[in-house]
Amino acid sequence: MGATLLEVDNLTTSFFTHQGEVQAVRGVNFRVNAGEMVGIVGESGSGKSVTLLSVLQLLKSPGKTIAGRALFKGENLLDKNERQMRALRGDCLSMIFQDPMTSLNPTLTIGEQIMETLRVHRRISRKAARHRAVELLELVRIPSPDQRLNAYPHEFSGGMRQRVMIAMALSCDPDLLIADEPSTALDVTIQAQIILLLKQIQRELNTAVILITHDLGVIAEAVSRVIVMYGGMIMEEASVEDIFYRPRHPYTWGLLASVPRVDVEEKQRLSPIAGSPPDMLNPPAGCPFFPRCRFALQICRLKIPAYFSSAPGRRSLCWRLHPGAPDRNRFLERQKNYVN
Amino acid sequence: MVITLLLVITLTFCMMHAVPGGPFTAEKALQPEVEKALRAKYHLDDPLWRQYTDYLLGILRLDFGPSFKYPGVTVNELIRKGFPVTFKAGVLAVLLVVFAGIPLGIVAAVKQNKWQDAVVMVMATVGVAIPSFVLATIILYFFALKLGWLPTFGVTHWSGYILPVVALAGFWLAFVARLTRSSLLDVLQQDYMVTARSKGLYQHQILLKHGLKNALIPVITVLGPVAANLLCGSFVVEQIFALPGIGKYFVQSISNRDYTTIMGITIFYAAFLIVMVFIVDLFYVFIDPRIKFGKSTG
Image (cartoon, rainbow over all chains, first blue to last red; front, side, top):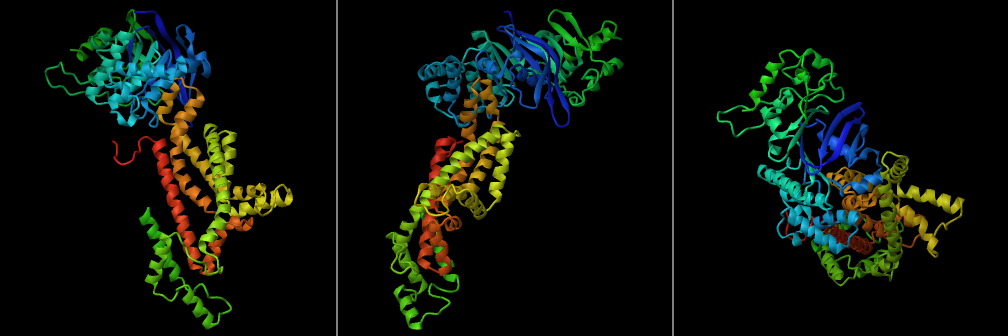
């Protein structure tokens, strides 16, 4: 593993709407190393996308980052102005989005859309940009790339468009690629291909990748570390093995139980997590998950839990893991129910 | 296109003849012999189907026939005389609509909810609400009468075109500014605009290349009919500024039952409109790659 590439520290972002302040991200800390692939998992509205849009300063009004730092190669991105951020976006930091059907401009050829990024950041000739665009389409495995450069987005299938998005994002050899639900809008078979492609790119180009998803199953084979978010906070962070085999947070258990499994012999009903995500306009005073948590204690309602760590690089936000919590051992035993 | 035109000709012809009165109905009745002679001269006593086919044959030769009201003048001559003035004013009005309406709409969209937006929107709302004859009278009063900057009538000097062009363009300028604004605001919300920002493009690239190109599609749609409308002139504006244009003849011809002039100018207008709409369709292909000739694409 390389050095720390991105370090997010106490990031806090809210949307100031007519109804009031929607606290989308509430003091998030994490780091990403160079060349690493990290997954950020959570339900819709957990704040995972907003966290990374905040890092890139791509939030739409009325969203505003009100506290925290995002150190990229030691420099705080949140201190940079729009001009400085523009120079970084698409060059050192790039992003791909959920819906490839709407994320490409329908009136420009895909060649133009790839080449314009190159020409803005690298100031190269059209010919050189075109040459590089062909290379990029080859890299993302689009057949006959030379002809396809002149095609428009509507002439591509969803999976192919997402490959084009990836090619665009990779055009300037970024250090960090943020993929916001890159496979959610695609067919299941295509999903796997896209994730595999991202994995290959991370290995071959040594690009760090942050993979945002709501589907734990999608990322199991690709990432090395998983960050689980809920209610604008990180609930649990651990290596991918620990998340799948030794999860310690009730929310992670819930996520695992709601993913279909093929390695279990007997028929099992998928169990959804009862209840719905918290209203971030008036988030609960305590743990955001406590209203849906079967293991909630009195304190969970009153006070946001602290992180408890059982090993380096692993932490869980849960009062049940406090050394003095009642029935702590019996609680930890339960994790076995969620992994087979 | 030919079918549309034929339909217009037929409808106009039928409606015209359905209206009571005729070209030689006047307060002071003509002597029966004179009227009879006139009717015979212009073949008005022929059965209608005969008049209709004769007329169609004339059109095929691009001959709209003689005017009933201006003796010795053909409709072709009326159009040839009036149209250049109307056309010149119309072209200027179209240019004003395009080069003022679209930029104003862009400014309003980019500065949404700021004072620039408020100014443009107030102007645009007023512009859409005020009829052209009121606007024409107001600007005539202020700029020509009170301030004396511009002539009150006539087109002997280029400055004579300024006020009529503004009066002509006013409504459509406001309309296009509003349309551009709402269309661009819609486009700015699209996912691909976030993509454009995430690529680190310059603000002007994002706005013009990614935003405006998509936002102009609905604007171009209305510009075709707008151009046809403006180029065919406005009776009211031509009357107020005493422009010797085609619009004047058209309206007079209706109250005069000047059959050939009504027909001629209507057909001219319809043909013009059809051509403009066709040109707009051609433009689409350039601006929106999803539209192609012939085969449909998925």
